[in-house]
Length: 281
Picture 1 (cartoon, rainbow, N blue to C red):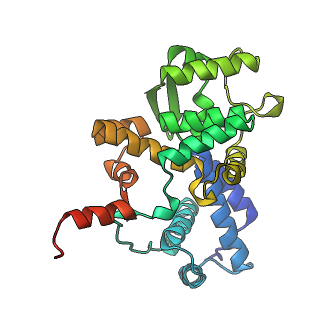
Picture 2: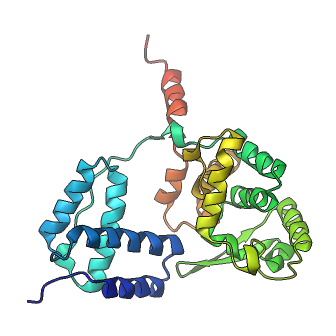
Picture 3: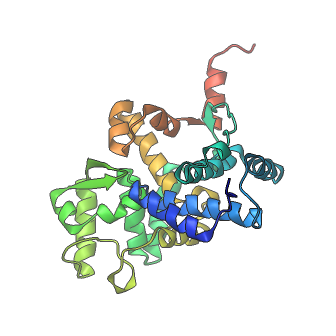
């Protein structure tokens, strides 16, 4: 039997396979990064079930969170399925689902509004509008490219991701603000959020610009990342409608379990709920 040696050429092929499967850009980037880290850790050794188990144990010994370890194992398992190295696939760590989210990473509505106002005050109009676009619609950062002049005029966007197409309605006020911005930037058609030279703005650039805003806005950096705006939208939408099925459709979830994760209360809220039970004298 041939030795299972993981090569850079195989990782290039793995990337093509992920693209063929229409995985999102963030997923492709993460899977390749995790697979690359595993390859570097191997130092040319053969891929075996024992090696995978050793790496898994080392990640835990480093203090990595169980969810982080499971994410890395998911990347390797996807690679091993494609390579037909199924005997090397590892079991995920079993994690009991929490009944609440960590307070330290919870972005409040007030903090969100502070970020928007700070970006406006600093003259970062594109960033302010992007915060409102993600926070006001719940789209993923990879879906920002679907906010085009044409979709803003229709007040709806057709989003194609992971082999699915969904239509989202866009708030009229947001459309008017973005169309006004596009006019000032001389953008007559196509994507509204562009980098210098008219190129689409990258996920990394969006992330970096948001992080650079934290200090001036007085918001903890660990709370400020694009997906947290999506969480804020989900919580606000649900509190208004109490319709988890409709929310799942808006967010593009095919499984309600995923949507329910977005609706977990914070630790502080959970403690207040326990206090209201009145079971402690």
